[in-house]
Image (cartoon, rainbow, N blue to C red):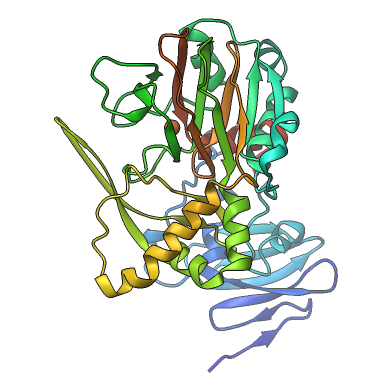
Length: 378
Ligand SMILES: [Fe+2]
């Protein structure tokens, strides 16, 4: 039974928390554990980490007194007499149980085959000089999932320096960097002159890397056009036109692999990825790294047609942007959203060399928040 007690200031004590009148006429309910845990004194001003240890409470924290004092809620705690003061404006942020506003949570803008002239472009020397350019660059990557960095110096260090503007180089099971050119003993279609089908990278990793960088160092061959498309645009169309297929691809986990003499990577992924709002956030697709589907065969009667329909849609002229990546350009894109490939080229017609690596999307969002907002402690 709830035994509410209303104080003179309008604060209502409940069994496990308190109702507080908030600015704007609303009221909010706050749990005692939550209040004690988040007393402003719980946080170290230097490290900004919580130093208060909620695990050491012997029982549920209870207030000896609760009152409104001006624009703050004041609580004296029964157990240790500790005094806590919570500004009402601060409490308002949490009163409805909603997630804290995230500046890096920008709406996605789907794009189609004609996007090439509109790809956001940034000069590498300017990015290094001006953090405002870095902000615009990350905004393009969050909203559209792709951007081109131009004026890249012709060096290995230039790629590392560019990555370091938004995070760290994130290794995969084959190392920190990779070289896309013809290899003598290729372990991957990317290392041949053959056509490279549309895919997202390293789906066999448990957490495939979030941001991919491809720095074009040379491209004078015949053929070798880059093919890029927005997986969000295709998946959103699938959702509208074939909702049953969309459901299968967004709910079913399928196996991916990458296997050779000394490695055997395996993971299970959904082809269409949804965010916590249920919106399409991206895709994980690779026909050449899809493992043998170890699902009930009768289920595959439905799954395979959906998988193939989506695969055909990905190849449609409506979505695929075709262009030549030029030397001194670095294309940067969301590896969980942007599906990419390459047309075949003539290896003897010239030189084609792309040096690539990855970074983490969470680090990129962190860089964006740090550059654009004050945060919780300033
Ligand atoms: Fe790739």
